[in-house]
Image (cartoon, rainbow, N blue to C red; front, side, top):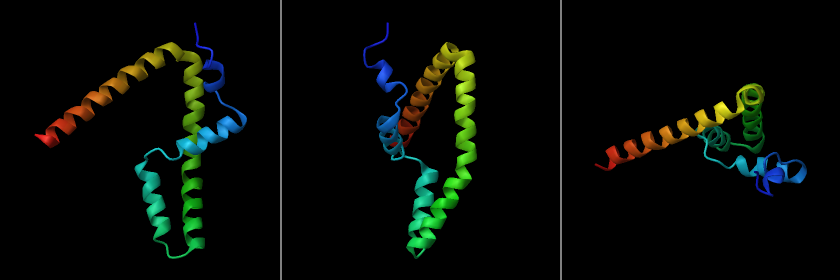
Length: 105
């Protein structure tokens, strides 16, 4: 049984979708932060804007393709992919903890 809020937050549309997209853009991404640093160091607002436009146009095809593949595989292998995703997420956490422990030792 799904919780009452599930339908509103699982696939937000309208203003909720826009707000979610804006908030998700603040998540840590090394490539994005590198592009922002390069744009900030470009020397002018126009050059910085053009640098960010180039970054957007360069990443748009890959991100669109990834979203489309996610929908395709999500429809075909939904429960299996959710289980595999959870397992990979847990494995990633264990690896990151091991790396942090090694750095602190």
